[in-house]
Image 1 (spheres, rainbow, N blue to C red):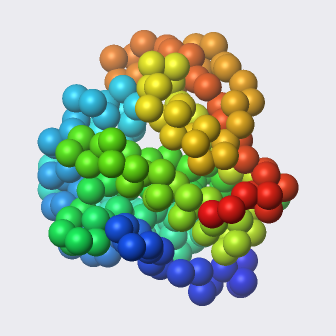
Image 2 (image 1 turned 90 degrees about the vertical axis):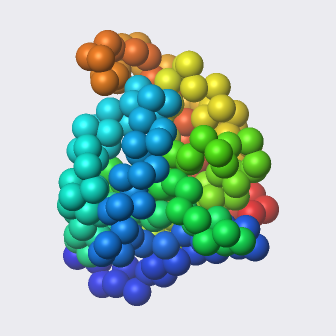
Length: 194
């Protein structure tokens, strides 16, 4: 356990977005979003979709993510639109390797909120949090070649395409697909204006 991480902020925000650590009782919100976006998310988040099949399992998911936070294994934030106070998605810092240290980010947003630039703002908040609060030296994300929006988002936020791995991700239907890796280093971050 890293003592200097005991006080990391549980909320991050700007003028349009509030990111906050999941709280008990938010499973019903997570379930509703997953249920309403299942078809478009299932190929990119098959494990998450398989875990969240009803409100009770969604609440268990939320509590597991809270435990990961306290165990410094992953930092999962719900994404809230500030003006409407609506839960609209999730972003996480996960698969943390404290030896390097490096971490992966993963994110999704409800279909009604796509195309508004909100996720770009969210990713930039998480980049800053990861380098300044968690003190990582590298962040990475993975996306499928078919997810052009995610690739564009990564590049717009300063991530650099580092590789293309063939047949490296298992979709919900058990099809293996290629994955594109994007990364951003501490040096990259230090040169950015977020």
